[in-house]
Amino acid sequence: MSQRRLPRRAILSAIPAGLWIVGTQSPRALTRLGAGPSTHPAGESVASEGAVWPRAVVPLLSSDGEFPPEPPPPTEDPNARPAWDSATLNSIVREGLTSSPIAALTFDDAWSSRHQVLDALARYDVRGTFFAVGRVIDADPDFVRRALDDGHEFGNHTYDHVDAPTAARAGTLVDQLRRSEAALQRIAGEASSKPYFRPPGGGYNADVVAIAAAEGYRTILWSVDPWDWKWPLSPDRVVPSTRAGSIVVNHFNAATAANIGAVIEQLSQRKGIRFVTLTELFRSQSS
Image (cartoon, helix red, strand yellow):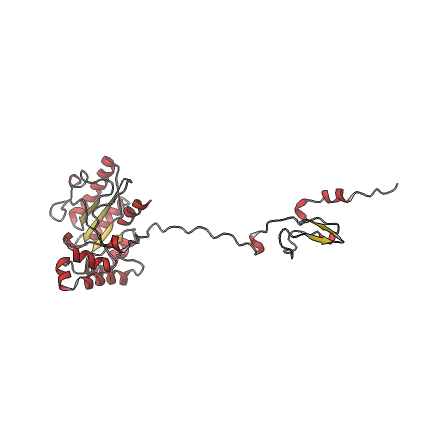
């Protein structure tokens, strides 16, 4: 029985297509995948024994080294603070403009009950912005480290709790700002109080705002003040006047540490508002 010679087309069709890149009249022009990159540019024709066959275009894998994968898009740091221009730094802010049901929780001075305040905020998983004076930062590095570990942030409140307009006239406000920032840097070099500055007692004038702005700070005041430095903190003096975008000021004293939990609960239950840091408040304005 004579052997029947199969047509060349039938032979090629029986070979899995994935094993070949191109077909030509010569087997030498057939290249197995994985045998190394072709020396012909994509789309170039391959000549063999007088005939020209179009070269198939096969995408190369990133492992071939010719087409590295696209780098992933940069992820935005959720803790990145605002990068305000000079004009914005030269304006004061009392509250944020946001449609999100959030309000900024801030604390001033950091006197007697700072660790108790941290305990209370931790129980409710709430983070705030602390305007602690520089000499308290210097005196209690454990407080600073724990506050940062818990997700709180710091703003500048001068080093000695000085009256800002008086310091501006005396030419000492810049030193007060820099000493307070340096104290924070000595304890946690990755942390910064910029760009938030709150003058002690809320005292400011045009010179104070301009000096702070030149140092990279925006003057942050508040829209809700329960006067917890004078009377025990009470939800009744916080919740009714707090709305989306409010900036609430409190202080590190025993009554505030004991009652801040009730404020957090009632603000959430009665108005659906949660407390956040200044950074989260300002980020919500640009989203």
